[in-house]
Length: 198
Image (tube, rainbow, N blue to C red):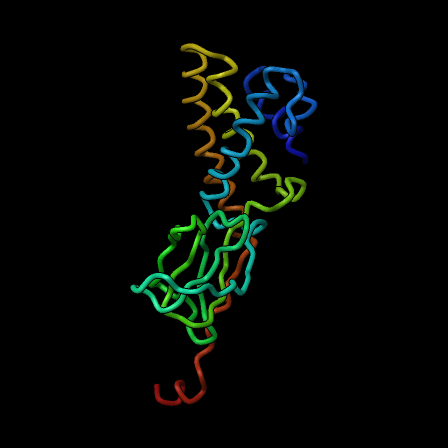
């Protein structure tokens, strides 16, 4: 489902027919202008709320020259980085000591004491056509809560925004349950020599 269709779904939850045709660039309607403004904000927030399976990627990040004396190594965060899921090495399943910072040049950097790492993260660089139904329901309600104020205005808009925010929280809880069923992590095997000592 493309962004325009998602915006029209969100507007429908406000009782607004909308009929948005384009948000990039926005068409001449007021609704399209608001959707163009709030769609990326709502999406960034929605993606940050859970380790969504459909948006999770795994990469070996590029090493950078380390300018931070508190850490041994520095790595560039990939484009579209929205949320950290896990850092691991060939020997460590989950690295727990690290720092995500902005360098002096404004680049997003991961500082860590491991020389070679694998980075698992939620990305915002994905097509909305790949959004599963359970995420669409949550996201369009969240987007509607952002749009309620500027579309409905006044006390009606404020009240609708609060109500939709609460509804979105409930839909988030349901969506994360559905999404978590898509991931099953294998337990680490216990080496035979370790089993023998038990």
